[in-house]
Every structure is written in C-alpha cells, then in structure tokens.
Length: 427
Image (cartoon, rainbow, N blue to C red; front, side, top):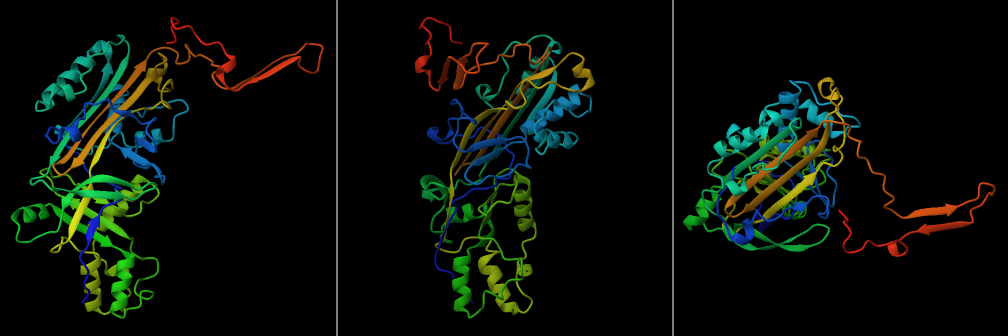
C-alpha cells in the first residue's frame, strides 16, 4: 500500500475559478471595502481584462474575464440591431467571438443580471435604473451602478450588470499565510482548514464543503512508486502523463461551481477550462496507466494520487484570499464607426466602452459584481481628431535652394520646451 506523509495542500497559483454569484455578506472591513476606487487595468502591473474566453494566457501576468461584456454586446445586437451582428471598422479580433455568441443564453441565472440597450430619448437610463432597483432589492443602492449622467437624446446606450453572492454554509478557518510562488515570491493571506481532526465537529462541517478532485505531485509520486518497486518509465501510457497540480471544488449555498486549479494552463482560457472540466467529469485515472500494471497497484495509485476527494487526519488545505477591484476602458473600440446599415446612415460610433469587475474570495465565501457601459454617439468619429506632437521629435530648417538643413534639433525631453503657467488650463 502507498503511504503518504502528513502534508499541507498549498494552493500557490490560482488559475481558474468557475462561478457566477450575488453579493452582500459582511466580512472584515479591511477585506471587503469594494467601494474603494478601483485600479485601472492599464495601470495595474501584469494584469489584463478580456471580454472573451478564447484569449491567450501569457505567463507572468494575471488575466481576468467576466461575461458582462458579452451580455452588453448581446443587448447591442438584439435590442439595437434586431438580431444582426455588430460590424465595426477595423475591429479587434475578439469582436468576431463576441458576434458568434450573440444568440447564446446568458451563462448566469436570470436573477443575477440586468442587460439592456436603447436610445437615450426612449428613457433607457430610467428603465435600466428601475430594473436594477427591482431585481437587486437586497443590495445597498450605493453598490449598484445607478446611472446619473446626462446624455444626448440621440445617443445609444448599452448597460449590463451582474451581481452574485456565494457564501459558505460554514466558514472556513483563517489559516497561516502562504508563500505565493510566481515570478516574485510573496506572502499572502489564506483560508482553509489546518490539521483536520475527524472528532472536531466544525472541521467535519468545513470538510463537507471541500472536494479534492485531482492531486498529483510527480516528485512525491516517484518516491512512492520507487518504494514499491515500480518502474515509473513504464507506468504511464505514452502521451498520457498526468499533470502536476491540484483541482478542488468548494461548495457554497449557491448551486454554481467554484473550482480552483493549479494545473499549468493551456493556450487560452477556453482550452484551460475544457481541460479542467474534463478532468472533473472524467476522473478515472486508469487511462493514464499501462494495461500491464496490476489492478491492486492501479487502485493504490488512483486512490492516493488522483481521486483523493477529502483530507485525511492531520492534513491541511490553504487557499489564497483574492480581492479584485478593477476597471477597464476598451480603448481599441473607441472612436470606431459601425458598418451596419441602420447605424451607418447616422454615422454612429462607439464613444466609450467600459467594464469594471469586483471579486472577493475569503473564508466566508465569494462576492462578484461587474458592470459594463457602451456609449454610442451620432456623427463622425474623427471630427475632433487632434494630431499631437507629444513624443520626442526632430525639427530642422532648410533653404529651398540647399540640400542640407541650416538648423536641426532632436528634442528628446521637455527641458527645451515651454512649460505652461500655473493659471493656464491644461485640461
């Protein structure tokens, strides 16, 4: 039989969290202050927001996706374009993916979101605000994205909002900090369960909320099979070597999945999700092992290194606390004109495309909220275009009768430029 030493499952790289949820439980004020001004994604180190799942994952940076942008895009195509896909000049690649999904149902429950679009003159702002207040009666109005801005009567406005709460039935423990291992090691707060004791009722309640779907550590595994005189070279079928890592499912009061995986990601979010989901739904690990391996050994390997399911006495699990509050302007969409006939005739273009995401995970559960605004304006998108000499430049003077300049300068920094007076209006 394989015997494992007492160990602590340290989740040191959260790759995928699969969920959608509704928000208002209380926790420590220093961990739940989601009203603080969000970080701008363009200014946040090594962090990107993506509107679609088929986005490449780059090592060394965070990647965040929330389906609210797709919700807003669907409203644009259904409410404004009456089922047409949105065609935009020089569109970024992800627009094709957005358009391919306009007829898909929202991937969250109906009570968790509002999405609609329309003309300002048709009271779209009032209708959106009313829908927010009616659907999210239990949410503090200060947390709702109530629209207070004034818009031109011919502006087209698209709004979407998602708000979900997924509290745990029983709070996990606040556990010791984790040394998070990435490009730079850092100590981070964690929650989980330390030194599981089957005679402790609170431990038993917490453990009911935890499924260890997959766990494999090649170094630990190699030692164990060596102790049992098994040749690791011939153990696995070609091309089916298991990945090192951990997949866990956490159960909340919601029926939605909360999945965390430390397996190395594949090329895109979508590929990574399918990889993890397949391992969850097809947990049998016999497919990894050569047919010549005796059944008893297969069972021992599977039970001790793959299908663990739960903690054993004195084992622990620690999961990093997550707190995200970030906003993002899709500048690559701004000032782009529509090519759809009904919008082209009035020269509609995208004035602003904005998304914010707030996400919290700790011992109490999960909070997620996200909003999107897409503002469309009538007129030529380039009518106020400004050409700026706002970077280092070369300047020279040359007589029309000469082949060479008689004056030339390269201005690399502002020390030779004229600074504005204090009372001059910069903005």
